[in-house]
Amino acid sequence: MRGTMRRIYNIPIFPKLIITFLIITMPLFTLSLVMNELGKQEVKSQISNSITMNIHYYFISLEKELERIIRTQQQFINDEDLLQLSNSLSIMTDYQRAKAINDLKNKLTTLKDSSAYIKDISLFVTSLNDTISTSSGGEAPRSLEEAEQIAKATYSSGIPITFWQGRLFLNLTYPNNQMKQDKSPLFIQNIEFSMEALTNALNSFPQDGGAIFFNDNWVIANNKYPERLADIRAKIVEPTQQSALFTKQVSVGKENYMVIYEKSMFLQASLLFYFPENIIIGQLKTYGVWFRMLVISSFIIVILFSYGIYLLIHRPLQSLVRRFRSVEGGNLATVLTSNRGDEFGYIINRFERTVLSLKTLIDELYVQKIRLQQSELKQLQMQITPHFLYNSFFILHRLIKHGENETAELVSKNLGDYFHYITRNGLEEVPFEHEVNHVRSYVEIQNIRFSNRIIVEFEPFPESFRGIMIPRLILQPLVENAYEHGLSDIMSEGRLQIRFATDSDRYYFSVEDSGASLTEERMAEMIAKLSLENEIETTGLINIHRRLKLKYGERGGLEMMHSALGGLLVRIYIPNEKENSDVSPINRR
Image (cartoon, rainbow, N blue to C red; front, side, top):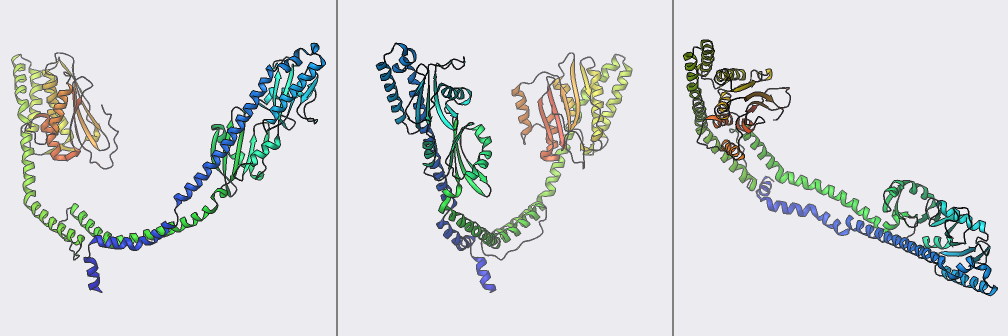
C-alpha cells in the first residue's frame, strides 16, 4: 500500500489534473447535453416579443382605421348635398330635396360599409329637423336634443371618441362654435362604433389572454381573467405614467402575469393585454427541473473537485507557503524536506537550497553592509557642519568692529549653542525638540544679519512632536538653503515661514520662502536629482534626502514644491510610529 501511494505521488501534476477532471466532469457533460437555461430564456423571449408585436400591430391598425374614419367624416363639411340641405332648403324643390337626402344616405352607407367597426351613422340636419341614418332602427339619435347631448359630451371629455349612454361615437358638429354660443348648428353627424366588433377584435388575438380597450370614461373588455383585472391595473399605475409603451411582469397572488400596455395619444385611449406567464412557458417548465438537477450536480462536482485539488495541490502548496512565511519572518534555520518525486518535490528541495545559500550570503555580507551604511551616514553628517561657520565669524567681526557689543554677545551665545550642539556628542539620533532649538539658534544669528530684509515666522514647537527621535542635523540645512539661495538677493520684505504639521502616519517640518520664483524646468530638475540613487552630489538638500532614505526607506524623505509665498517650499517627512496617536490631518499647502 505504501509503495502504491509513493508511485501516485511521483506521477507529475499534469496527468493527475487530467485524470481528476475527466472523472469529476463526466456527469456535468451528460447534463449539459440535455438542456440549458439559455434555451429556455431565448424561447420565452421570442414568444413574448411575438405577442408584443401582434398587439402593437393591432393597436396601430385600429388607430389608423379610426383616423381614416375621422378624416372621411371631416370631408362632409364640404359635401354639396349637405350644404344645400343646410343652407338652401327653402328654395329647393321636393325632387331636389329628396335626391339630396338619398345621395347623402348613400354616402353615409358607403362610409359605414367601409369599416367593420362602424355600427351606424346618423346625420341630424337642423333645417330638416330630422335625422338621416344608415339604420332603420330606433337607436340612432332622432332629435336635435339627443344629437346635441352627444355633441356636448364630446366637448366635455370625449375627443375624439365620445362616450354617451353606454355607446361610443365620433361626433362632427358644424359649425363647432355654435354649441358654445347656445345656438343650434347647421348639422350634427354621429358615427357610432360597434361594441361587438371591438370586443371581437380583442378576442381575435392569437394568444389566449385578457384584453381591454379603455380611457378614463369607458372600457371595452373581452372578459377573460376578469378577476385579475383590478389587481393588474393597480400594479401598473406608475409605469403608465412614465411610458406610453411597455411590457411588464406582474405578480398577482401566486401567479405571474405578462402585461403589455400601449397608449394612443391620438385616440386618448389605451390597450392593455395580460395573460398568465405559464401559457407561454408551457413545455419549457421541464427546463426548470433540469436546471435544478444541473445546479445540484454542479455543487456536488465542485465539492469533489475542490477536495481533489486539496489532496493533489493544496497540501504541498500550503506547506511551501508556510515555509515562505517563515523565511519572510527571518527564520532561515528551519528546513522543509520532501520525498515527493513530482514538480512540488523539486520546487521544495530547490527552495531549501536557495534559503541555505541566502543564509550564507547574509552571514557574509550583513555586517559589512551595516558598517558601510553607518560610515556613509557619518560622512554625510560631517559635510554639513562647516558650511555655516564662515558667515558666522564674519557677522561677529562686523559687530565688534562697529561697537555693537550687546548684539555681538547675542550672536556669540547663539553661535556657541550652535557649535556646542554639533560637537557635543556623536549620537546619530536626537529628540525632535533639540533639532528645533538648534534651528532657532541659527535663525537668531541670521536675523541679525538680515534684520531689515527678512521677516521670519517660526511656529511654536507642537507638544505632539516632543520625544520623537530623528537623525541629527537634518532640519537646519533646510533653513540655510532658504537664506543662501532663496532670500540672499532680497533687499526688503522677504518672508520665511517655518511650520510643523502631522497626518495619520507622518510628521512634517516645512520651510517656505518668498524668494525668486522657480521655473517649471528648474523645479523639475531639482526634483529629478532627489530621485537619483547614485547622485554624486552629497551636500545640501540631496544630503538630507539620502540620509532620510537610508534611515526610513520609503517612509521618510524630502519634498520640494512651489511656495504660495512665491519661492520654494521644502518639507521633510518622517514616519509617525507613536501608538494611539491622535493628531489632526495635515492641511496640505
